[in-house]
Image 1 (spheres, rainbow, N blue to C red):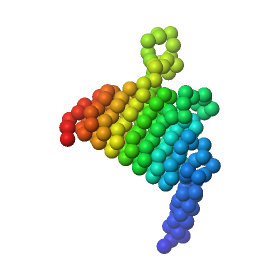
Image 2: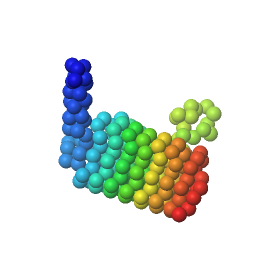
Image 3: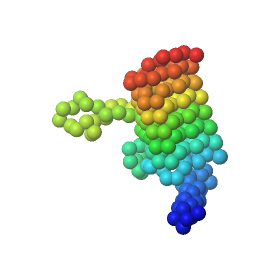
Image 4: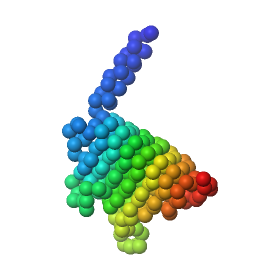
Length: 197
């Protein structure tokens, strides 16, 4: 093994050691900021954006991948409506680079899996005022629920007011704009049911 290869291995080992210790766990200082952070759960290092922890609940044995944005509210230290803005169930897997941005209520039930880069929010921008930039216009928040045992594919988007039923597969790159029933496969933009099982 060359010196360069040995050095690369040492650097990788050092990064992996640091990443394991920098992850957020239920008993760590950062983990204790959450409204609830279940045993066996972890937020991998590094998180992308993380604030409003006091209004985020995470169940047991849940894995939140690296580079995930997880927020309750629009900014750190914002006064929030409850301590249950974002609720993530037991045995959930949130894929790398995903974003969950809650302002009112987002519920992800037990055993839900996200592929990488999934985006879920309960608030959207308005566009009615022609004198105000769209980025400064908001619509009322609408709760989002993702049912037990569902799979949300890579690069999918779940928009405000949507309820996704139990054991639903959302195909990669889909945009979910309306409710999806239990036991179905939905794909596209907007997502449409293509199979019921």
